[in-house]
Image (cartoon, rainbow, N blue to C red; front, side, top):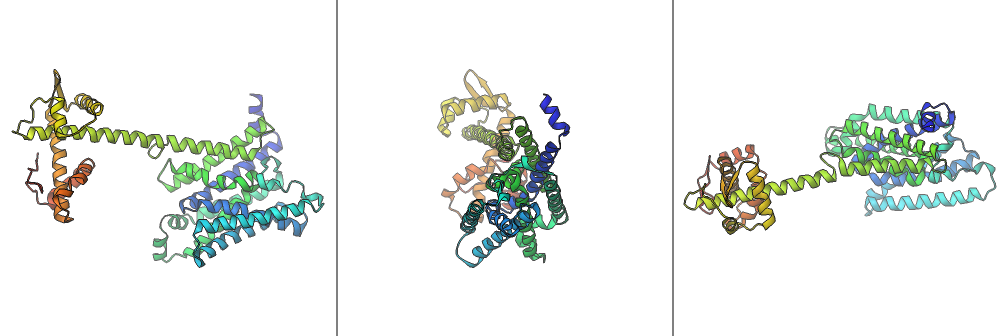
Amino acid sequence: MDSFFEFFSFSDPNIRYVVIGSLLLTSSSAIVGTFTFLKKKALVGDAVAHAVLPGVCLSFILSGEKSPIILIIGAFLTGWLSLVLIDIITAKSKLKEDTAIGLILSVFFGIGIFMLTIIQKSGNASQTGLDQFLFGKAASLVGFDLIVFAVIAVILIVSVWLFFKELTLLAFDEEFAVTLGLPVRAIELLLTTLTVLAVVVGIQAVGVVLMAAMLITPAAAARFWTHNITTMIWLAAIFGSLSGLAGAYISYIAPSMPTGPWIVVVISTIAFISFFLAPGRGILYRVKTQRRIKKQINDENILKALYHLGEEGKKFYEKRTLQEILSKRKFEPQALKSGLKRLRSDGYLKNENGYWSFTRAGKRKGQRTVKLHRLWELYLTQYLRIAPDHVHDDADTIEHILTPELEARLEKLLNYPKVDPHQSEIPYG
């Protein structure tokens, strides 16, 4: 507990540098990564992260020192060059974008490793710690690093704020942006520049290998919680900040634990939680929704089968056995029994000594399902010219999802027909 209060009091300058630096790096890269993610260029971040290594090495060879500004300039140039080359290869050759990304990533990273090996064997004492750009070491941040990162983070955030509408339009509908006369190529170059800056500013924390995760994962996690891009950007920034803070704290209480990898572990954990538990888009929500829809379809099919039985002699409230229901439609025994219980609980059916019959509400619901089925069959035959013997399966699916508004439009479009293509009566209320 003492370590917790000591950490969050920020009394130690080293703690302040690491925490503030991690927050700046993670939040700013998450904001830019949101547009990269929406533009479906997730692999681009990985390519840039690997392409900055030769720029870092070349800057060190030319300057002979590990000045953050000089190294960032070199990293920015080679990172930006890698994205330009990817665009050129994709546009001028038959190679697809993922192939071009893999090619540029491997070539640039290979050159970077080669140059790093030469530097390590050069005997230059200043090269110590240069290999940290491979895996990152946020714990080594000092005051001057923080100033540089803060400036770049401000540039990233202000740029996104100023060009928010243009970047949003580019991410969602590039063709519409062209028709509006927007300089799409310039906006793409802006996003490219911001992506490279975000990667460059983050490699000292999480390294070349893990930076792509830091750029894309917060945005991917945020996407599961909202459909609004503004909310998504805020959530991505919050998730990134939480991971930066948690990674720094874990590294503080367990000095053998590196900050960068733990930042990625935390944001990956947030992402997995989002993938499974997010309302509306999470895996568990989708499974639950699919089960609910499956039960709804099963229940409506039971009501439809009972209505079909009632059409024989117009005895809709006649008591029916399970065998009679199964004679009209095949059901799995367990699905039929559980469906009948739900329908009785919902007030659509009655059960007396094992015999099932409609309530008034159940009869109306079964009648509407049959009506929608026959209206859709008629629509398919009249407007899509599909043979009557080929429309049943499609109608059997669509009848469960037609809304009252579409039902009214179908009735009006078909001029309130009396019979379907098979000359069966279309029942109205």
